[in-house]
Length: 181
Image (cartoon, rainbow, N blue to C red):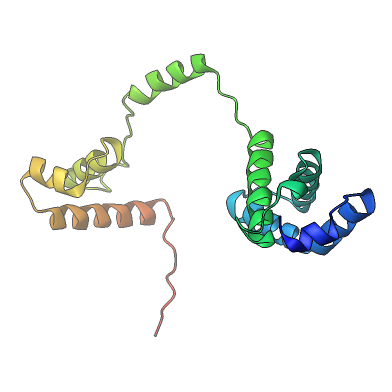
């Protein structure tokens, strides 16, 4: 057992546990907040506080303090592992997505349906329409399109770029680009 904990928390009482957490709460909060905010976009400060409480509860409930060994790891490593594990469990529990299996079959059927998109008249050439359709609707790579059309992949990328530019202008989606000198 770590001499720090051994001497300080040999006979663990409520006051001593409180002292332990007062000394280590900043470290726990830092670990939890960095992990939660980097992995979960919808996380809030309340989530961080909840996870910190869960960490304290887990350490006390499972009597982790008495089982800590400095020979295996430092106190910070030990707290880091517990804090991160509890944070993962908490966020998984609260961000569960339930999917009905029957809905997945319907989704698979819809995905296989062919999407028919009519390009605006006389905006794109037949070649541009064909390249856009093959790349975006058939999910082919430029190399695969080039093989089918008998042209180079560089030509396919150029045709795709020109088609996208024409469609942006037509739909007024062209953005002003910032000039960097």
